[in-house]
Image (tube, rainbow, N blue to C red):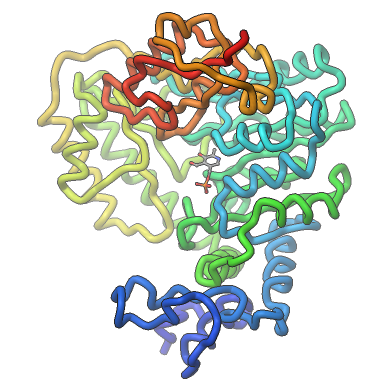
Length: 481
Ligand SMILES: Cc1ncc(COP(=O)(O)O)c(C=O)c1O
């Protein structure tokens, strides 16, 4: 009979999970943080399972060395020679890698589908981005890949660039030729770093893309919490140290990490790693079948288009994921999302034309069928005249760097009406969320296209975050420039 607290008997191979279970099973009266002491009498069950890493899962002095052991197992599974479990999400991982690889004043070649966390990592370090833009699929308006030649051209024009940073897969589940990018970066003697936040299961099933390190990248970050059975915030940072200084990696990781990591989050990442190693291929096989099943049903709905069905055949896809385009049904993606929320079926992303659900190894046929029924029902309720796709500004933004993100971040700024902001240099980062790709970034010229694109996203119902003026009637610009 399996142990309900550890159904796959992972604790033998997952030291942090073992420490977590041992702490919970013992009658301990901790005279350490956290102040809730795992007692539910004051704020209820909310705090019961929150066990700290130090003074909980392991002792304050880390006597058992469980974290180091878990990190070693992590690195080994991904074929890395450096790996760390993070409790700060891929946000922490992106900042770590920016700090570890670049120096103030460096140029780096970066995809413009980057997440805001990497842009803010660039602010921390003081690097200047050389942007490369993705191809956009004309039928769905979604990004497909960054062509290798585009990065090669950027490197030829900026021979001093210190690294290439890509996001693979994109938010919508498409990938570039990572191996080709690695070759180009290495031919220039620089590392390739991949934000693989959405691809934690890559490399663990033959029908899924290889993970970034298998494809030749030097470092990657992935959010275990996004697609694996791990706590929110759990992330993995992995590197090969041939082109990256190992000591700098450690220093950079610690520089931006909390000193009070949650043992529950860390143990869940450890458990997810052990599960992937042992059961990954089988569980991912089931997930792929569920995704195929959902796709098969959805493609029968008149007007619905799946990105997988229309994208150029050369584009590599994460087949565990799918993006649904609703423009041919005339329904608004955001109206469909509202019905799905009301039916208890929230999705990860919805905008005017697109809906992206996240399926995981924790889903089963029943829940996937319920989701598909929910989509069909919502689409039929909202069906109207088909409309052309309007690509989101998140995928089409065309930035013009005037000063480095760091210089702009620290410069004096003024707030001006939107009309006067056009042509000036942005002091703020503004991003529709999801996907969290900056449309305005500190140091970039504000264009009419960007302002109109943000307003369109907001009018369609997408949340536009981080703008000081949420109405988008005014913007913060550099006082000079
Ligand atoms: C591409 C990408 N990178 C990084 C992140 C940040 O990840 P986290 O929320 O784990 O900090 C996200 C979040 O959505 C993302 O989409």
